[in-house]
Length: 93
Image (cartoon, rainbow, N blue to C red; front, side, top):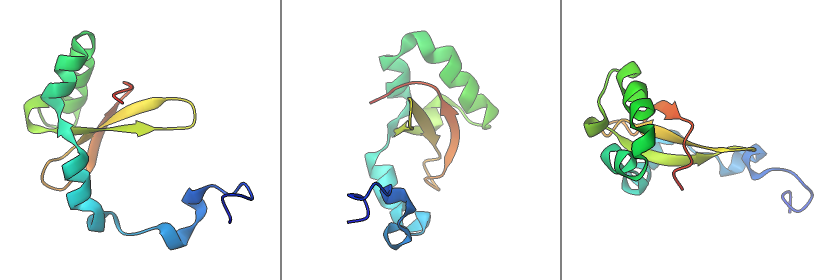
C-alpha cells in the first residue's frame, strides 16, 4: 500500500536484507565482463580502465546492469565476494 501512496519501495526497511544473503543470487545473475567488452567494443577502454582502477582485469570480473533515476550504469562485480568494485556509465540492459 505504501507504494500506491507514492512511497518508493526502497524506503521500506521491512524489504531490506543484508547484502551477504543475496551473494549467490548476485553471482548467478551476473555475466562475465568479457561479454560486456564484446557487446560494447567501443567502450572497451573505459571498461578496462575501471577494472584496472579497482585492481583487477576484465577477465577476472563479472557485471550487472544498474538503473538509477535518470540513467543506467553497469557495476563490475568481484566474482568471489559478489561486491561491486567499480562502475561504468554503460547501459548494459
